[in-house]
Image 1 (tube, rainbow, N blue to C red):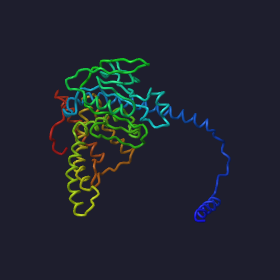
Image 2 (cartoon, one colour):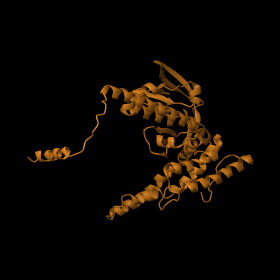
Image 3 (cartoon, one colour):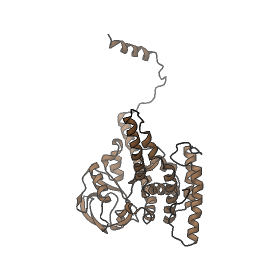
Image 4 (cartoon, rainbow, N blue to C red):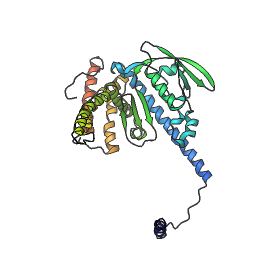
Length: 357
């Protein structure tokens, strides 16, 4: 009886609920599945176009930043390659990814700037990479990890490396010329509507939401440059180091019976967050200028972001970023600094230890 009573209550409740009054046309399972395939294809085609645009815009910025990026972040590189495996694609989109991107179980090249050294050496979009030098590249996620590890550990004395690929069923060994670039990856998340980009120390990460909120190429370039500067300036590592100091205080508080919930660690990690953001803005504009991107057009991105996101016009207490109006004004000042250096035929290199930055 104890199990029957809740069921009777549910039936009684449902019998009293209102229902629809029309008779919608039917949707057969076959037709629904066919439409799912069509929509999945449209999504992947859109992803392909958006990501290709992102890699195209990012590549010259990576090139331009190499000379002024921290030395330990720069080295021989295969270039700005996009790689993927069908294992990393959401299930509903796997067939479309195979058709549109040529993805399979192995590690395939999905995006490759046409002007890159890798492309000029003969690598092509759709190639499945099965070896870098003498290192085999397995299938799936393990292959992606092996590829990234091998690409990050190319010896500084190397000028080229043999890449073994499978193309149209044939195995090829392609000697790929290396170029000196920041060893910072580029990731694009086509399934996230969040308006966000972030640096994690080893990669620049973009969401579909942000790319869609940035209709102009120069504004996309500005965000790439900003996040690349975070990585190149070592901001992520600095935050982690700062957090360790706060962690000690959290541990001491815990030993005294006080649960801080990581308050000291978080506070320490963000202690210089606003300054890091200012520096990334500043250094990023130099990357853009060196790459030949219009700085004045790029900085307009902050006005656009305010419109798109309704961001606060004043930074509140504990904010980790300057407010967009402040960032815009600082960028105007940086643009004048850059233009003065151009006029004086001076190198486009950021000033060091600038007060107020």
